[in-house]
Image (cartoon, rainbow, N blue to C red; front, side):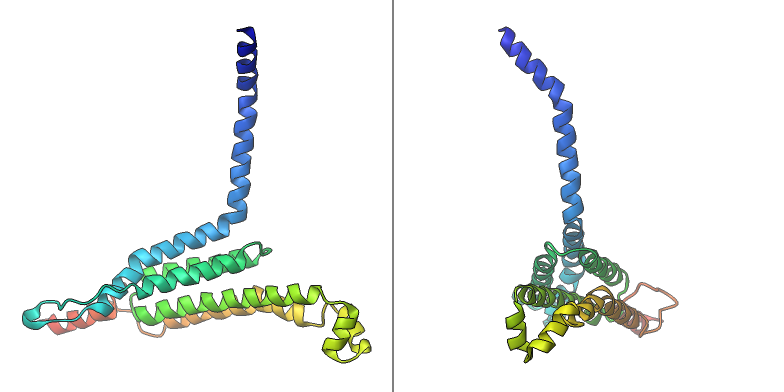
Length: 227
C-alpha cells in the first residue's frame, strides 16, 4: 500500500512539469503551424460568407410568377477555395520564413477585402484566389528547383550548362543568380503584385456615398425602386 502512495506522490510532484511540457509543446506546434491554421481560418470564412452567397446568386434562375426555378446544388466556388487552400498548405509546409507568413498575409488581406467590399465581388474573389494559387505554384516550383540543383555534382552541372568552366562559375555564385531571383520573387515581387492587384480592384469603382458597403446589385435595386 505504501508503494502506491509513493508512486501517486511522485506523480503529483511531476504533474506540473508534465503540464508545462505539454503547454510548451502546444505553443511550439502552434508557432510552427500558425501560418497554416490562420490560412485555414481565412478560407473557412470565405467559404461560409462569400462563396456561399456568390454561388447562390450565380445559381439563381427566376421562374414564372416571380418564383425561383429549381436548379441543382453546385459548390463550385467552395470547392475552388478548398482546392487552393490545400495547394497552399502543401506548398508552404516545411518552408522557411518568411514565405509561410507572407502567404498568410495574402490570405488575411484577401479575406478582409472580399468580406467588406461588395463591388465587383466575383472578379475580386477570383483575383484573390488566383493570386494565392500563383504564389503557391511559385513556391512549389522554387522548392523543386532548389531541391534538384542541390543534388547535382560538378560534372552534372557541366553537362547541364555546357562546360566545366561555366559550371565552376555557377557553383561559386550560389547556383548562378537564379536563387536570388527566386527569393526576390517569393519575398517581394509576387506578394507586392498581389496586394497591388487587390488594391487596384477595390479602387476601380467609386464608393457609394449612400451605402459604402453596398454591392452593385444593391445599388441597382435602390436606383430602380427609388421614388
